[in-house]
Amino acid sequence: MPLATVHPALHLAGDSTMADKRTPPAFPERGWGQLYRGLLREPERLVNHAANGRSTKRFIDEGRWAHLLGQLAADDFVLIQFGHNDQKADDPQRYAPAATAFKDNLRRFVRETRERGAIPLLATPVMRRSFDAEGRLLPTLGDYPEATREVAREQGVVLLDLHARTRDWLQALGPEASKAMFMCFAPGAHPELPQGRQDNTHFVEAGALAVARLAAVQMREQRLPLADWLLPSA
Image (cartoon, rainbow, N blue to C red):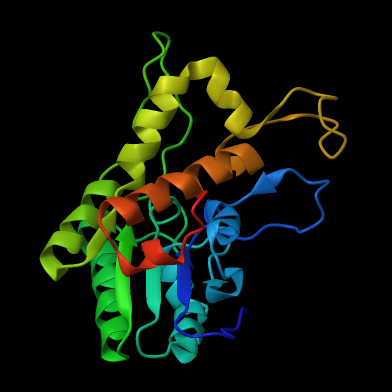
């Protein structure tokens, strides 16, 4: 699990859409947190605890949250983004209903972060690439984005509404151009994926970088201290 080496640090807690992926460039999948690191003046300040397949419940049950708390110092930041795996009602290891366990877990993350003198931030889950026949982007994450917003309002926590921002971004790109942001490959189009892949959840580098920049824009818009950590070009 990742370790903080510099403080104050920005800790990321989330799922595969945010997580670091294989460092060899041959495999194309990237998480947006991985690309956010490259937008920082001091990349070593980012500690990415996000992991594939994790929900709020599984992140806690596996000890990942406890590990993150053990890395916290006063004035660190913790950016929390879940929802994609919490909605998996057929998987008891991950399922956390939006109105109950999911919100309770977010409240716990906020409370325990503050108890250690650190600063919590919440992010709504990023959109999937799912369009209808008329080219309209379809919601696939149920009540989880709004549940995140509700906890942010209730707890007085800064919110990065990545769900809304990625919705607008993908809708502007449309069904065809948006494929280039995701793990969407025809058979033979990528040497690591000879059978092809149609994955409308996970990003390639261009998509992950675009989402990282959407997060950076919101940091600046809200005049957060984290905005000062960004490179001028971010």
